[in-house]
Amino acid sequence: MRIAIFPGSFDPFTLGHMDILRSALKMFDKVIVAVGYNSAKSGFFPPELRVRIIQDAVQGMENVEVCSYRGLTVNFCKEKGAGWIIRGLRTTTDFEMESVIAQANRKMAPEILSIFIPAGHEYSFISSTVVRDVLNNGGNARCFLPQNVDIEHYLKLREQ
Image (spheres, rainbow, N blue to C red):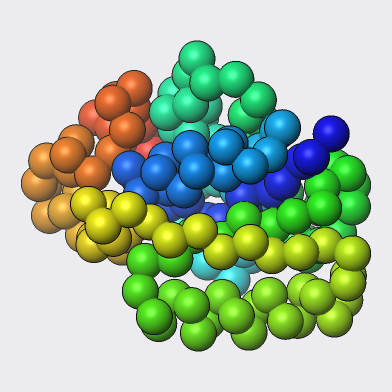
């Protein structure tokens, strides 16, 4: 079985992330969307809510697993039996940053390959940073988020 990990902070999961996931599902038997814990960042949504948001977003999609993890992505890949890491690209700046990370991962685990998937042009401007800014300023971010995500519900849970 061809298993890939799609790691990220996904704070929150956007239509751009969904576009990358749909592309990855055309290449792999199973894609694990993995929310990474970064102890240096508190995040807009706590990791547990990010997992729930993604679960809502992918509701009804086959061959998708959603979970969180700590530590190195290559170690998580080994734990899950995944041979590939999916990384989405929006801009050339993304490519430069992701290329460095991919090279480090390849040095640590040469058997695990990084696959870069460009976002569709209609999603290339959407970033979690933009969505957080809209939400922080009371704007309506629904046009940037998957249809199944009730963002107002998660904003209320975040405040509790």
